[in-house]
Image (cartoon, rainbow, N blue to C red; front, side, top):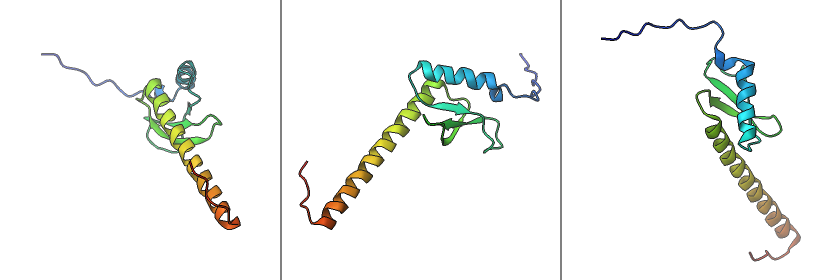
Length: 108
């Protein structure tokens, strides 16, 4: 029978190490993803990091056990949703403008 001893938790969690963040971001870049991660102060949990967009703006908290591949895929989905939302908003704005000035809607 094998008994596993409990390993004491280190005072400095390696997931919060700047080298981990730098390495993870390098992996994201190698995957062609504009996403980046950063340490967070938004959660008391040591197993979360911030997912940042291509301008360094906060997107969401993300679990630290996520791989760079999963993080890149999640960011692609976020970017697609954002782009779709912007296009939908743009279409709505043009539609309202056409209505206000009395122009017939365009056929697509």
